[in-house]
Structures are given as C-alpha cells and as structure tokens.
Image 1: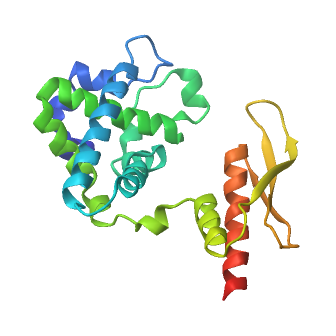
Image 2 (image 1 turned 120 degrees about the vertical axis):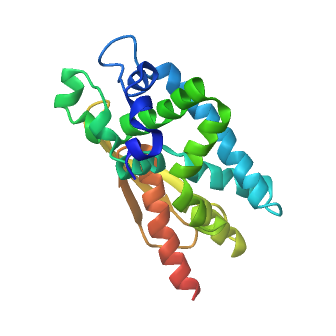
Length: 222
C-alpha cells in the first residue's frame, strides 16, 4: 500500500507532510521536531497495544517486544514497504551519498509522518495510521525467546549449566573514528574454542561473538 493510499493526496501535499518528509540537510524547516513527537506517539501506541493484547506477559517481555517493534530497522523496513523514499526531500550532499537508502533517514521520516498526522488530524487518526503500518507485524511478533539478543541467550544458557558469565575482549580495532571495525573475543569458561565476532561497533562485534559461542555451547550440550 502506498503512502497515497494510507494518507490521501491532500494530506501528502500539505505543508505539515512536506515538513515531515524534509531532511535536516535541506534547511531548518525540517522533520526533526515532528520526528520527536512521532517517536513518542509510536512508543506509547505500541506499548498500549502490547499491554492490551498480552495481559499475562511480565514487564520485561513487553519491553523486549516493544523494542523490536519500534527499533530503527523495523521502521526502515516499513518505510521501504510503502516507498517512502520516493517522497523524501534531501539536500544535494545527502542525496549524493545515498541518503534515500539510509535506514536512519527512512525511520526518522516515518516517525515524523506519524507526528504530522497527529498535528494535522488528531490522536485518533495517528493511531489509525500506526495500526495500518503495523498490521502485518502485530500478527507476526517473534516469541520472547527469539527476541533475546545473543549475549542474553548465551548468558542464560551458561547460567543454566551452572557456569560463570562469558567475558568479552577487544582483540583488534581497525579504521579511523566513525569508520571502525572491531574484532571481539568471547571467552567461555571451560571451553578451549575461540569465538571471534567482527562488527562496526564493539557492541555489534560482541553480539556476533556471542551468537557463535551460543551455537557451539548449545550443540555441545546436546
């Protein structure tokens, strides 16, 4: 479904919508304030939806599910499904550097659109818009175990075996600031294997290393 189908041509041509689709690289009349508003609205709507539809789930599980649904990667996927990039207004430099494909820009613009709908049409219309965006995702929310990151799953697995928590050490860092690559080793007690993860941040490298270690320890247990 296109944005025209979701919002209508009249709204898409409005000043508020244009502001929501204008990146800060263009001018000061951009979507940053609307993004702030849309982010808050989206977080509340999703939290309320989960609270209502999963009455027996504890706070920690609801938090994990909400984080999955509102994270930048999810928002960018939704934006791509509705071809939001074709409506974006970017500065020449941002456009040249591939801004229309950048997940962060797409995610921010989608949140700004939610904010624009709220300002122009009110809370109920914003809720309807969000629900339409999330129809398929509300029907296919991963299980709580699937939503746990690799470090959490490894930690829980080791604890269930009565073992100490893993250690993470940076073994190599390459590149200049802002364009670095990290290599991190995950050290598991009583295990001679070396689990090395590589990523564009220490956190990402740790997650990769933890995933490798988790797979190894799981197979070892079986």
